[in-house]
Image (spheres, helix red, strand yellow):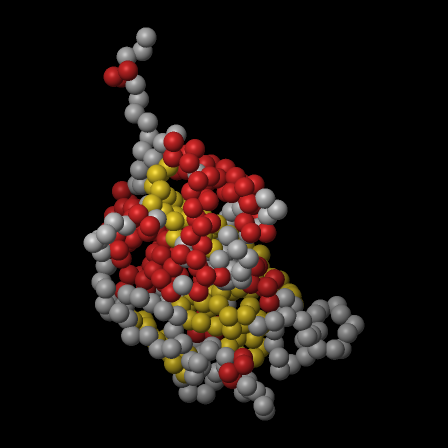
Length: 353
């Protein structure tokens, strides 16, 4: 008989955190029930805010578990997206930890809603194909599919070694200042200096097809202007180290932009092929003039939180200041530049220019 005292210790259970809207509490309960086998096997332990005991500072308790969790489940629905706490506190912190590889984030699509341009939209969602739980004929089948996906991730995380010292030291070195950063209406919210160092400066944009000039794809016999495409709003990463403005393939597909050529981009990882698309850019409530025709490149962006990267082809039109030590930044117009003025009757509230 083997000596029980020398038997290897089971791995530490993976701590799972549920980020959800209380309006989806019943669906969260069902998911937790389907994960019971993983809890009984000691693969996972789970926590959500319904386990906060009376007299406890609930915000501190949530932050503590969110910062310790190995696996964070974002239970996505229209109510989750509409909740300021779920979005600004739980989801934002979850994506920060995912970026630093301190935790794994999985979006769980509970109910049908528009999440194409959410920061987590580039992560693999469950159930399979991101099909909402409520859209399945059998919700038990949907939750079983989710449970199997979580089991694979939990077992994978359980086999990983502790994070390298470099990662842990980098995370510890990021300033934890709680000081709010002065932000104008047009700047995407930056809660503190730590946000700025993690994500970089970001600006809200509205992008879509050019609207002032006719556009004919190469080798086309048509003389009609292109009327394809639609306008979409997202956060853009301001990157003065990039020469060209870039949209991800997902963003280009969503806006249905017209391809007008190809190019090669030089990156730190080597040269990559990229398509060139005609687009227009607007900067909601910023006072910055709209760019009604610009050539943007189409390729993946290293930072998975963003669908657009603003390069020097756009930044050269502005005065851009960045003070990393204080945690502030700003953009403003500089003199007159190669701008195309909006047409007569152009509605800035409609287009965000």
